[in-house]
Image 1: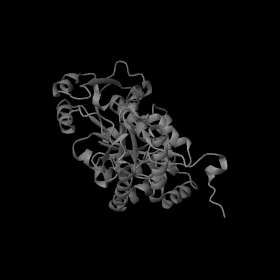
Image 2 (image 1 turned 90 degrees about the horizontal axis):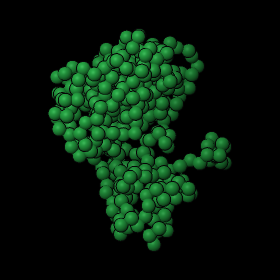
Image 3 (image 1 turned 60 degrees about the vertical axis):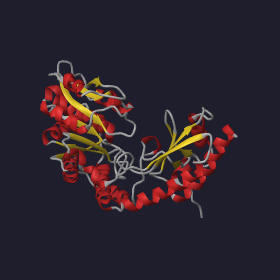
Length: 372
């Protein structure tokens, strides 16, 4: 009897995923009922817009929004959200995008919220206008940045953002006083389940969640929820229409998979998962907390990360983050951790209990080889 997988048969190694539900390692793992639903969906033709409206209605219900839409991953949803705010449902403006010259096309963004994916706002026709610094933003900077050229204010809820942004409530108050919509990118903030509703409740006009991370749906899906007229505009700018979002098409199978995954997400025992990952973090912390060549910081606040993470910070440059990360990838088993600018991070989100000892062993070997 063999445990050979499809990846083995094509010569690709399976890995231990200590990076969490990120695209670079395949997002998440789907449950059997999701896969079964997708296989069933593949046996019939449907009207794609009708299907998206049906799933979008469920997205609206679970987020508390007026309407919802299935986009092709959170990055594609960022582009569609901006296109909706710039072009609306005007066919002439839609046809012009991503060329938005002469239109109200400015997207205001905190410098503290810069992430590599914010280029997707530009892909949808937006022109970024940056305010504040990594450490601080004055409310007047947002007030003065809003002009008749402003299409929206973008707010990124990400673990990688800086501390200097205005509070979300301040942003909403200032933007809405000038009739400017607020777009929230909350792609990686699930679970817990109640995070599905907090942004709409607090005044977001559009909010984005990944369908292929904590929800455990197909990776090429995302949830876009918000005001009815803006969702209608996103739909007009998106696939299957020949518009700026055409390249972000979502298959019928993936829409059905998202629907089933979302229903499962709403009833799943996330608390039990959290307790299991807390125990994993306990083991990892105990294994590395006493090493003199690193400083360990554990974060287990769900307002920041859905599941516990452990950051390993080199002391006195005694080891190089990228070198250790590469050694783990190249070794056996292949282990992927997150090599950030100042730390090597272990995200427990997708770790199995029997993977903790291999991580401890291999990471100890890589550190000892450089610091021993």
